[in-house]
Length: 483
Image (cartoon, rainbow, N blue to C red; front, top):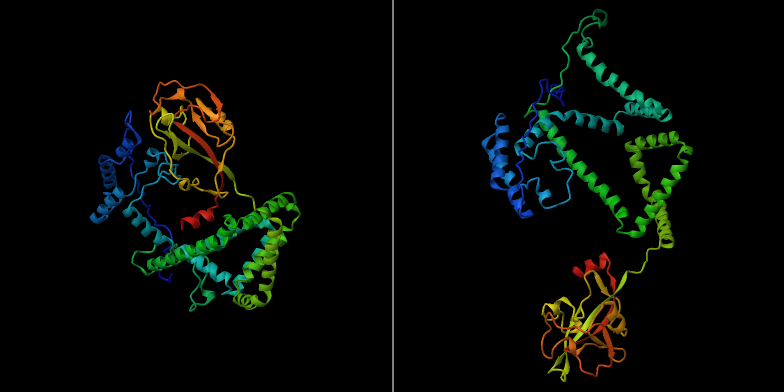
């Protein structure tokens, strides 16, 4: 800020009107047909028209241009409505206007607020520049004074109560008094210029920076640079803190979690034994001293020769400790999957069995597919049977399940003949269905199961169970396969 507009910082003298948009809530339909109909009703043309009319009527007194109004109407049609979350049963967003009684998005309103904000943000940038000059030792006497204040506060924390009061006196009240009672000009002798008596100047009034002024564009420049600084700082913090804490490296994240847990438990018990005043004093002096350009240059010049060896030693010690004490090599989860080999008799009860399909269900007489008169579903070749999504094969080949009796009883399969030896076929009984026909609803089913050798008369279908082990795949292996 230059000397002519140094007062243009914060608020106007007159009150600033607050813009509000009236919300129109239509009465919901008494009995909506479905969620789709409610969504269509919520974003219908009539509702959009009502919202646009309300927005136009509330903004008419401000005098926005026709271009702004047209652009606002276009954006209101593109931006989704707020009640879509209710219609689609989405998780609630706490930033929605339903939970915050604030105006919705409006380009003219945003433009007006940005102009007002930019004309008043100068005081923040002035404070930021002065703080930077103070911490970078531009004026050593000021920085030493800050160190003295920090020393008193660290040694006696109760002085924190005095700081805001002293700041109000030194930086608000005294400058305001000096404005009304200025110092004598250098051309006048102090003996003939009295500091007593009535005020000699009007009080200082803080006003916003006028638009199109030099201070207004300076605020825009500083705001632009502050946004870049925040983005850079945000990305830098995430780059440093995210990999060790998001368990992408589980051993390192587990070590950090262990240290934090132990530290919290230790401090909970023994925090009153630590010399917090001396620690805070050391931290304050170290942080402010590191802002001196000479100290920074000294640290950078001696980092490779003095700090790097200690960093490597600490890193090697940490890696060795993690490799020795953090054990995360747990075996992956394993499960057993099954597939049924189905065969169908060709040429009636005396015909030969022919391979038919590999199905995920046994296609017994009580299966929904057979009751509905449908053919079994599956694949014709063993090689086409794939592991479930997110799993991989744990062994090399399928194994025939020799416990045919166990899986028949576990699945309550009825009307079958079970081979206890040999190829372990589970065959439909003759009474279950007619020769050469598909089972239909209402046919008699033999209760339970019978033990046999597969040589007697039988039905049209037989099956046997194959099993194989699968193990769950990790995220890295899944990504590599998808890539």
